[in-house]
Image (cartoon, rainbow, N blue to C red):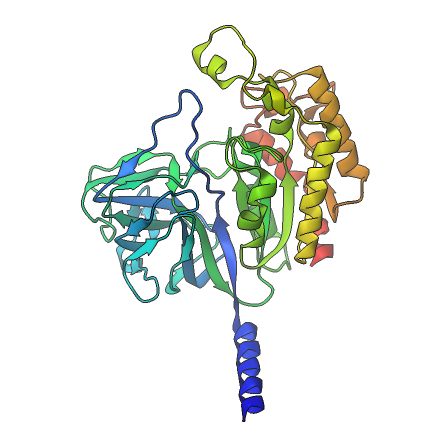
Length: 415
């Protein structure tokens, strides 16, 4: 009888797996609030509603969300939470509004350091359709787990629970996501997720707010329009200021790799673009940049890295991805001459790392972003018409060129 029961459970699991599986359709890299000079104070909410707008690039008829208290020092109380399709701005389509529950309960307390998944909810979402996730915080709740520089405005209420309202009255707005880390869809067939893992150049700094012009979203569009392709979400786990080997803007990339890549459901591929901040930050002083006073020693001067150290870090990411059956594609580091932390020595490190990425054999494929955006007459510098204004971050045209430079056949061969 026991053997028969085991067989029945296995058969049920196999049948359930054939019907569908969860895939991350949207996610973001959460971090503790940034403490650089000039950054606003960390907000605290109490008896307020926060409505966040995100755009999954994989559709489905059933979704769930993940909230994260990863960097909270105390428990986080969610009084209520809802999800709906977006009409415009921060207004929702009322007939699509659905209450979220957590283990069948409308409210939940998230322990410090922990994530929590909602129960699945039936909501038909088309690919590249915006949805609103609204949470009510009875408070007080300090926003200790965030993603700064969100791709869409977040709407914050005055006192009260407005999660079910079509539009939050007199809402203030911020450009951060709070506690929201992931949106999954229930998918069928070979649908899967690819993670774009990197720093601000992956996050989309320099792209026009609200237009999803970063290279991961543009790549997702290319994949969606490619004939005969299985559904493949491109999840943006870029984090502005992130470094491969040292903490700073968020924990280092090696430390966050498990949470931001390996823990996501349905991941089959990852593109890695990291290293420019490791090279440049030892020559950058955020206090000087904010105040305009003459340059003094960088607070990161002791964190200079060598090309070999960066190569070791990138190799670790490749090996850890492969350990979990995930294909990994290395992206070359883009030019930065003219930027605030450029040095000739840093350029030498960049060139050495890029040469290894192209020829070292650690990756399942190579994406040459350096070649896509560099000035052909001045290879250490990004093309003038591709840079945002700081000679470090691309503009919309630069991100378009990066996405266009990705050979989709890399992923076709890998599937």
